[in-house]
Image (cartoon, rainbow, N blue to C red; front, side, top):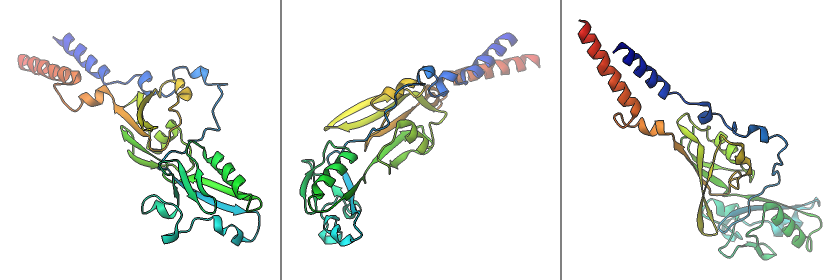
Length: 256
């Protein structure tokens, strides 16, 4: 009986341990990372209902010449999207346009920020010498749920974010999170698309979900151990613990 007690205790202890494969990032295929081409020029493409902040400037010291191309706030604004964003951005219409001062309707859907900047600079150049256009996506945010340090909605300011960067911004995956199956839920062309990323494999760098898009939802599932810990008799660790306790009590009573 003492031998059985020792074996059961050892099994209980080992079953609660996590392995390297469950915890360490990028360990699978790590040697293949070196020398791999990395997509540095990735930019998200503008979608319907995005809100853009567009600033126009010029090399000229006379600011009045660019005033007609700036968004007017208050009741005279040229675009908007909601109470807070309407004062700072142009809402992309269901047809993919924005209503830009002087130029009127400008098609932006499917373009990157850089492509929109080039397009507006070319059109404004007809009216203004050497225009400089800066475009930002105001409503670029991603929702993170599940086993991370700080779940919630994350606002992205630089227009591009990868999954590892987002997880770092959210406090990283907790000990109870599944690193090998991170779910990404994405709305694309009116269709819901679901992908998964294995954070323990270097293959994630080649995934179409490595870079995230505006309004993506990222979900980190709990591990089997975390799910089972919600109960006692549903967990094999709990059953083993109960068995060792009964055996211990039995041995104690017989020794009296």
